Length: 338
Ligand code: CO
Ligand code: ZN
Image (tube, rainbow, N blue to C red; front, side, top):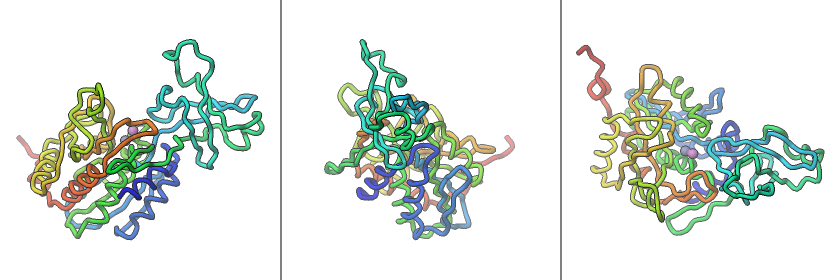
């Protein structure tokens, strides 16, 4: 698991530019599923055929990044954000483009560091002028944090744990899953970080009976933390609510019961801000009962995101149990005259 996570984390794949990470994930899953395909937006689907309940499990494969908006005469690049990047965290970082070009993030002279905004920052790719810069990078190219993953005991530190940790959990669950009567559609979605876009279209295509997202979540276990119930290393988190979804109480209950039955440590998660793919999935067509398995993660949206391998193992166990459970849709989620 740690080698897989390291590889996924280090692979380039900002929102809308998921070609490389999609190829890596496709290589990891193709021997374990019945069918693998992509769609016009670049979502990657892995299907395990079955005759009963159709379950969509989504893990977004994109990561946050910065996009080149302007190249000045001296060869410095100005940029905008792709997803939730903050200027304070970007300052002093090394970033890398899809073609391997590396740059330093520099800052204009600032009297007050509190006035730091993205437009005060620039990328310096070592070019001597505009002409030289344009040979290396084009307007619209996207850079991500340039960071190797490090393993410290059970903890892994690096960029893009959001959400390559979720991708690794889904990949591992697909490998372990035995025959089930459910039809499983695992989707490695595009463009979650810019507004749950790939999950919206893939969910429409699949038209699932049930939806489940696997993504990281924030923790409340660091010095002077926000008041959050989730802690690193205390198990998989079962989402109750975030800003994008109120998880279906029956899905939440199913996950809790499976955790109790299989003695999987879990924690309940209420996230006050932020969203995930279940936000788009549950609003598909007439509505899809949906839930989320979250992986606790410190320092989300920084190059030093930290997850715990035990939490990931527990998430794999919970996901595998959920995907193998028979659900009688009419009984569990009745639509009837009242
Ligand atoms: Co994110
Ligand atoms: Zn995420």
